[in-house]
Length: 178
Image (cartoon, rainbow, N blue to C red; front, side, top):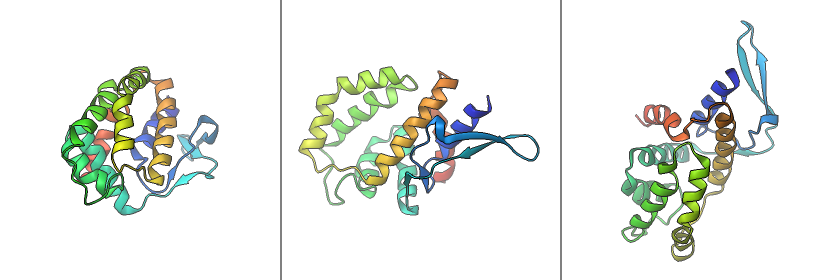
């Protein structure tokens, strides 16, 4: 299924700049290239997330650390470089809480969106504690990138119910990090 393959390709390359933040099926069009091969045409660039090269590098590192289970580096370094936490913050107290949220709420669920939603709801108290107790903020580009990735993940899952965004992004992320 060419659209599924192309959608997976967009998902794993979405941390490149700029990122289409509104990639729903109405904004994706498949055309035929000169050799007759399907080519994905992206429409409606009204909502774009601009991710500078430093943020893209840090985002790559964060994804790699998340996928490899290196929550200490993810929280102590990547979260600060991306602007989620102040650079001078001691993350010792925060690390166990965020590790639980990331591990149980995201990674453990894999491709099952229902499990992921249920797991995130189960740890909602911990999420609230992070947002209200610590100086945590979400960079504007990150909200748009995750919105775009969520839409693309949904498209990929409609063609392949076993699609796992974490597994799909790992080869690209690990190559880019080198």
